[in-house]
Length: 224
Image (tube, rainbow, N blue to C red; front, side, top):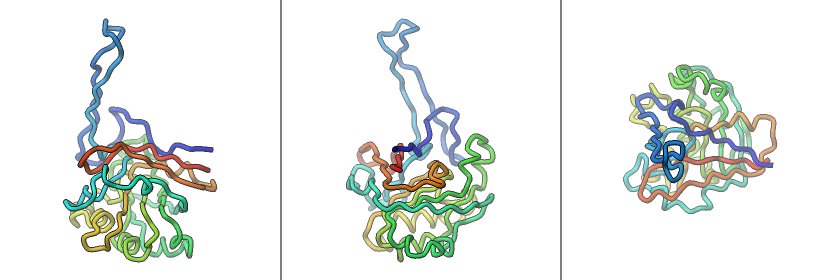
């Protein structure tokens, strides 16, 4: 059985504070005399369910079209469920509490419980929970099998602390300039809540091959 973990795209979907909104413009409509229904979408790559490539925060990092396709398939997923409140951060101890399973997984799916608030844009977008710098360093340096991290908030990084620290969490996870050479991917605005209580076999999250770009929308799918 397959479960979709990505959200539908719409002009009114919540976005990271300060990010541009989505714009959908009808190009042709049959109802207005057009030959067909065609549409122009002005899309900001970091809105909605998407994957960040290393190039997002590292000029020498791989762009989304250069990442091997097998890096978007995960055979050993691990759901980490911890209810976090406004501004709280998932720490290293939360990861270590998973025991040996955190060492064996190839994708971490973080469920803070914030997916429940996505229909309330004001709450969902402000000071949401995220990953701590300490947790990001642990992932980078001590989880060599890990290929990706996904979270049920708008960003892996808190919207208040991130700018203050020059987006240290993103840079730790995405940049291999300092932290080894392996590629790590970051998925944001993912409905990980759908996986609670389920046995997850595999995760798939294939991107479009956007040449030279920093991110791409995805529809993450779980096989249960």
